[in-house]
Amino acid sequence: MKTVKYSRQREAIREFLMGNTSHPTADEVYAAIRRQFPSISLGTVYRNLNLLSESGEIKKLSYTTGPDHFDYDTSRHYHFVCRECGRVYDMPLESIEAVNRAAEEYAPGAVDSHELVFYGVCNACLGRGTISA
Amino acid sequence: MKTVKYSRQREAIREFLMGNTSHPTADEVYAAIRRQFPSISLGTVYRNLNLLSESGEIKKLSYTTGPDHFDYDTSRHYHFVCRECGRVYDMPLESIEAVNRAAEEYAPGAVDSHELVFYGVCNACLGRGTISA
DNA sequence: TCAATAACAGTAATGATTACTGTTTCTGAA
DNA sequence: TTCAGAAACAGTAATCATTACTGTTATTGA
Image (cartoon, rainbow over all chains, first blue to last red):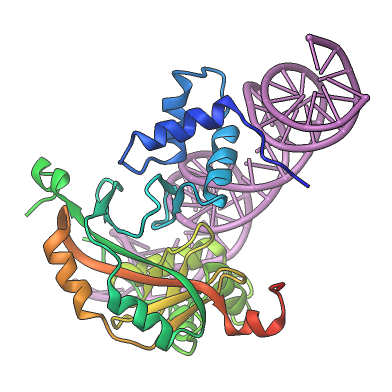
């Protein structure tokens, strides 16, 4: 049987995510943790992010073709993805009840979760003038 | 100005997708079109899938860490993704109105679309006994 | 018919992620 | 408090999905 052993690196990753609401990618986590563990490897970051997400402590968000994002907030909530900068924002609303009813009625299988993602251009990118016209 | 030129390969891809409701990946499209154009290259498949999706004729679905799927049905509808086999199914329901209201009220930017994806295990995988207990 | 150029096949390169390998760090039982 | 077994590590190679490049072929409109 495989037990999960404590590791300082994993704790650092967990703590970094806890104090962070920006849904960082593995690379961003890597860059941050390197300040504390200069020799940590990217593989270690990926392995621990996967461990944490398999144990349900964090959530892996695979919303786009690009890199996955990781969220420490595992409560039910939705996200907004900016098509320009790729950033992922929280949507301040709870699970919509109509969605759960839809799942039960129409799915061609057993639904255990759903993701609702809004796409568009974030206020930061709009204000920055990255978009013409 | 770049005009889009006719190509037999692109027509074959379009027609394959039209007669197909299984949301194939680029590799699956490639395998199918090869029967007709044995020397088509995977790059051509990708380029045309992207052309078709940029022109709005098909839709690229990036729901998971794995490969993207492509959908000829561009009408508003939702999908169900099987965690076991990765297949993407249609959910037979229209855009939920509550979702659109939520987008307008809470998004930290300008929303232009949303995706609602249900995750679980499909009937095929459930029946097949791939899942224990 | 023919030149401009989009699209092609084939292949190399990229980006994200996972797998492998030999070394280090935990952990719980002696 | 050792200390051996196993999990985790750093470093690196490999894989997978996708895009970019290059010289050739196909399409198109004048």
